[in-house]
Image (cartoon, rainbow, N blue to C red; front, side, top):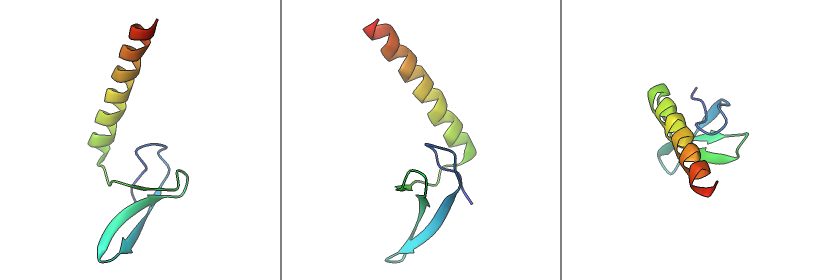
Length: 58
């Protein structure tokens, strides 16, 4: 199983029209299957973006 990039809960794998995708039951959304490294990169980018926005608006 993979973990959701938004909430880190385990996702379920689903198949629709011969395509496989991940679904997060917590976020109730289809999610991409990101590797752990990609999740860490996304988290780092999110933290940097949040810091930049805080500086811009304060």
